Length: 247
Image 1 (spheres, rainbow, N blue to C red):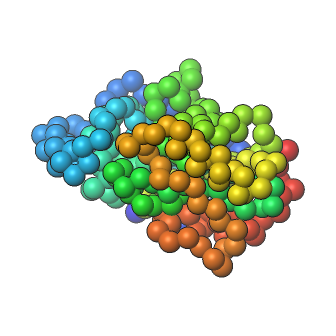
Image 2 (tube, one colour):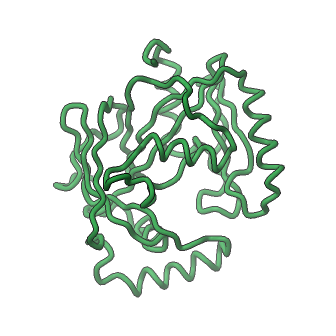
């Protein structure tokens, strides 16, 4: 969908050297005049998934690529408003942007997760992640690295801080949203990483936890079922590119 507010390549992986997404203190234009519809939709969502929490997330109002710099504007909305937008998309005034840390094992496999059945992404497999939250905007500008570290730690128990990464980010924009991603290289085999995630999920003992468990991807020709829409392109990109891009 073409929009004056969103000017980025669609359907292809592209390099990103800098992300400058700023948080606006004003209400998102998308929610104006839609409060009754948002509330009605939220009641339906809660009936289907009682564990949902109406917290705060960032929804973009603009995003453009200039050279290898992504810049845009985001507004804080309630999760209920985000889910209402999600059911309407594509919408010219609003899009979703999020980040993926891509854990890479010592033998080059990717370690993703599968979402629990009570979440809005029930059963889907993708890299541990979450929408940008107000705390991700240090000084009013989104901190992609901090978001990645927090989401992976909260969902899997893995601490990726200080591990080698790709020198730059990459991104992929699809109708479902724009994902900014970066590989993180771990000095452990995939089975050991997966076992750590399973223990973390088991030790938490939370029936309303976000993830069901790990998903190991070793070969682009042998993909797990129920991959999220962004995953095939990210997996293909990983196995086609060399490890020489990380520092």
